[in-house]
Image (cartoon, rainbow, N blue to C red; front, side, top):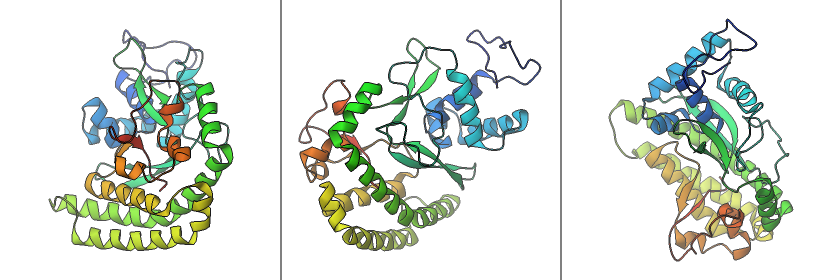
Length: 302
């Protein structure tokens, strides 16, 4: 893959004669590499979801690429070769491989991609700290930034939360994700059916699925009560976060991984784990307001 340069001329060099990327295709791959779904990319670029899917389908056909994950991996490797990275850019190839451990702050999150009919195509592994940012002094080039900051900031955050605790939280999140997967799949199917029927808001079937999900999740976390206590994660606070996440999914579908957690929920967690939900606090950037001042960004362990 070779993008056009900033003037719109086709790039030269090795591999001449093969199709080059258009500026829009390069933008889409830049954003996909930061962990955004097709729907989120469409929203960011002010185009339709169908347009994003069409660009991917053209990429697959023109470049002999099998799937979205391979397109991101190829593009990330070539995009970053030989250029100076922003200090906060995530330097690792995307999508992340299973059992990735190179980054001390890595927290795995599954991103589900949808087709033009809003049906799930599959999932790729991303990090909850990854977000898309514009390259300085440009209005169209994007890169995958770590919200924590540079390599030193990531080490500080990991040390602040505790490497052992991070590993144990990740293990617990994997159990939660394994339980959540079938329910998320079912809720996605119900959302598609509701969308096709022109129904807005949660349906009765969706409410039934959510109720069963919360019963099973409560049972799982109660069984892991000793682990939660060891990690200083209050059971009630974790259940409130899970409920927020599933309600948000039912209301909004698949959206950005970064979301607002109400202050009253954050106050349920002790200070020594609050930085887990507020990674920017230890990144060296501007301090965030305290929970009683304004909402904070965070993510469920689900």
